[in-house]
Image 1: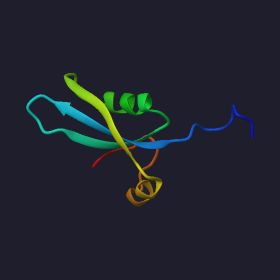
Image 2: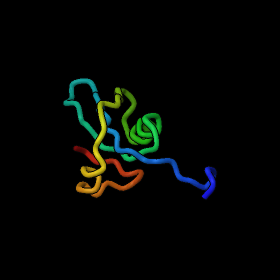
Image 3: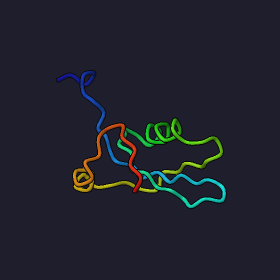
Image 4: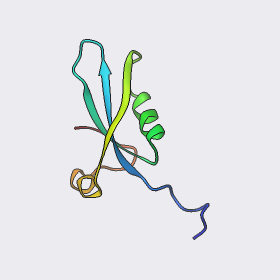
Amino acid sequence: MSAKGKKAKRQAYLVAVAQRREAVRTYAVMAASEAEALAALGAHAAENVRLQVVGGLSRDMVRRLKLKPGELRLV
């Protein structure tokens, strides 16, 4: 298989969503990069929120959660 046809390896990122006067919510996002994970959440977030990658999940945890590429899951 050539490098062009190869899919980017996805990883599960934990992204914190902070909004004024509300508790911080943390989402698990399957993405190829941190920028892609932030963009995925940014598309669904309200305007005045702060997004920050705060960690990741192991492959085992991703399997247990049955997290799929492109899916956002509140954790």
